[in-house]
Length: 112
Image (tube, rainbow, N blue to C red; front, side, top):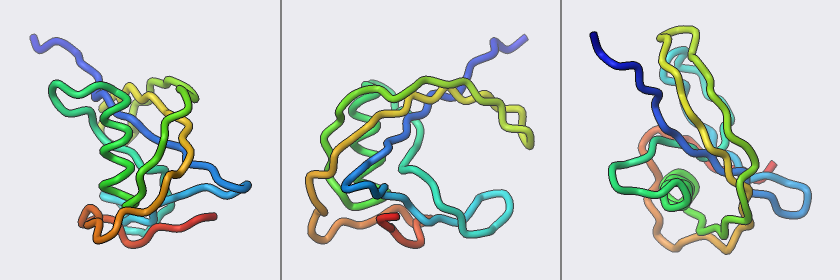
């Protein structure tokens, strides 16, 4: 019997002047364009904070300063029964990185 193990993920809420930095990406299941927080999986040997900074840069092209943990949640996806253990950070923007290459599934980045 295989031991149950959740997928460890991080997300970042980036706020500036009452607006939030969101990614517009294609949903892997429905194929529709959706708005999301920058988020992704923890890589081996990475801290949660380092993963949040990396995922934010890869998905938005922005460097941010983490301000703290906003929340921790367990979520089981209804379509695949995978349980995700997500740590969400609050962050302040530092600025965009020149010539940043975004992940292939990111359609656009918006301040909303």
